[in-house]
Image (tube, rainbow, N blue to C red; front, top):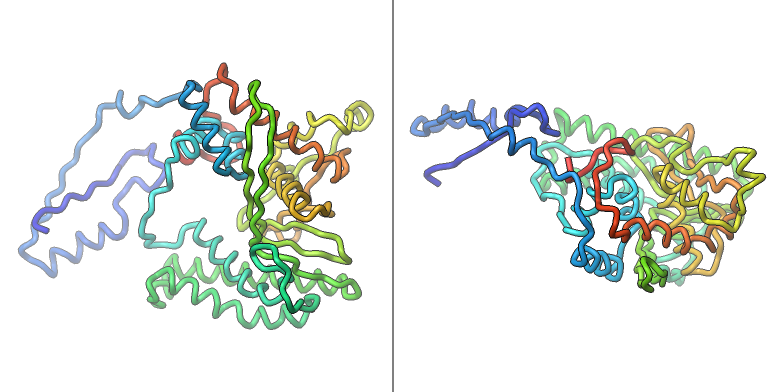
Length: 380
């Protein structure tokens, strides 16, 4: 091209860095040196502060918006979508009603979500030979044996090679792209976290050496259509989810979600007070809804339990999160208070209805919530 314009922001309000990227600085230093005919011109400009500071604080739920909500839930939604509404209704509107997608970009450095994906994929590759079910839930014709400590030893030997393959594919098969700098640190950290997790797994197996431990499924998809009455109308809600792992110890089913980020015990529910135990009706969904609203990952774990039961007619023993950065405190098992698992599963449609009542309430607009679990993707 003959003319190229590159812009960057110096705003201190920007979520990302307020200075040129390393790539731009490299262009400035090297491009003119190797191409003397190129002329670099720097210009600075400002945008009217009123335009910068004008932010949409709420969106009314018009009939058109309600129609979009119907389409969203009929076509299929996830625990993540409803969890986004709980965290920030306005962010939910932008992400799921308007369907703003994340901008696809070429990563010069491995970002946190990509980093976590690599570890998830490597663990799936390592554990896949031991899974009793295919991704679609069908049992394998030849059933693998129970997982043994020596199987983990083999995984420890193979995990670095698999991680290198994931990183190399990400950087267009350029192994040098992660041999130095931040990408090298990302690779080293991913390798270290994977090794720590596998050692954690081996320790768990040695603790239950006389109890058969099976990998039941990996990355299994669940889909269930639920009919609930919301805002005076029967609505079909198509609920979807993927379980990172389903395992069993002594025949007791556990659904596991991996997290490479921090997790706290209060994120998976809470034990009720003595007053709750004495006064709360265990057949009432109110307390479960409260857990969903106040505990970051509770709704997601509850959804897994419900979907598994609907697919296999088996009540799982538990669902839990394994945090790679808090292995010493893992697993973070869902805390149902004074509810039995069977009761919580039976009450789930009512929990969902109560949450959807808030989403569909035409008198309450989608507004931004600034003091919840994490920052919004779109509304700030």
